[in-house]
Amino acid sequence: MTSTVTNHNEKINAARRLLDTVCDPEIPVLTVSDLGIVRDVRLLDDDTMEVVITPTYSGCPAMGVIEVNIKAALQEGGFERVRVTTVLSPAWTTDWLSDEGRRKLRAFGIAPPAEATADKKALLGERRALQCPHCGSNNTEMLAQFGSTACKALFRCLDCLEPFDYFKCH
Image 1: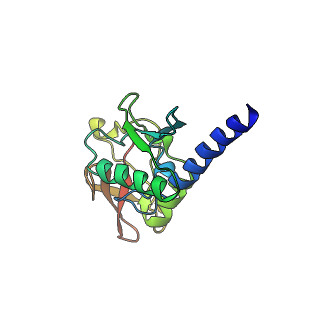
Image 2: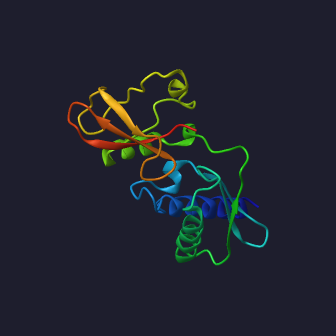
Image 3: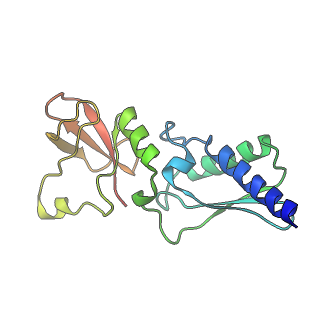
């Protein structure tokens, strides 16, 4: 019985390691694990490896590519039967981004989410101050609510004058 449990756990751990290599197609420095979209990995009775994912937002156009890439990585890693299941509830939140993911975003020139809740300063007419991922200045301004993708806003540093995306909080 112990060898079956160990074999079961070893397979799940192997699948998780493979998922750590699957990059987000929109932000290729992040993996699906960094993003926190992998909700569960389980081995089903028929030896199917199921990966449960939640999109960063319900209309995310990258989810189809992510599903294909997850299946390909697991199949290339030796798992014959793979199922990817998408769940929408609870909704993904930037709280699920790993610390490593936040570090990678900053190094890539994208300001990581500053806080766990949605930014309500715009409703009050207040300026949102973010740290520039290029020079570290807090003297920044929002140029557009939507950046290179719908989940990012476009900012500019008023000191180094470099534009940068901000990964919005959800």
